[in-house]
Length: 134
Image (cartoon, rainbow, N blue to C red):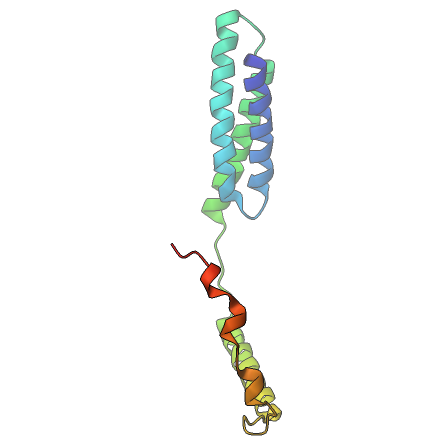
């Protein structure tokens, strides 16, 4: 059980460290908390059996580094909103372009060659009696 907690703690702390470096550093808190929990469980079991605590210290060190990077990025990184005017102009241009393309098609319903016989559906072929409706 101790080795399982140590392995899960190392995996969680490395995952937290990797996520803290990425732009979505807010996701690093979840594996970091899991690494702390696994580290404390392994630390308790190591104290109980008088075993080595070096790998558990590694888990705590990596988790502390991940927490500090995530907290630093959440405090000092500001979210900059881009120029929304350019986005609005692109949207208007694409809308105008779509309207022009639709006007170029110039389809009239009267010009279409559709026989009314093709639109009629025979209800006898559908076999509605076999359907079970709940």
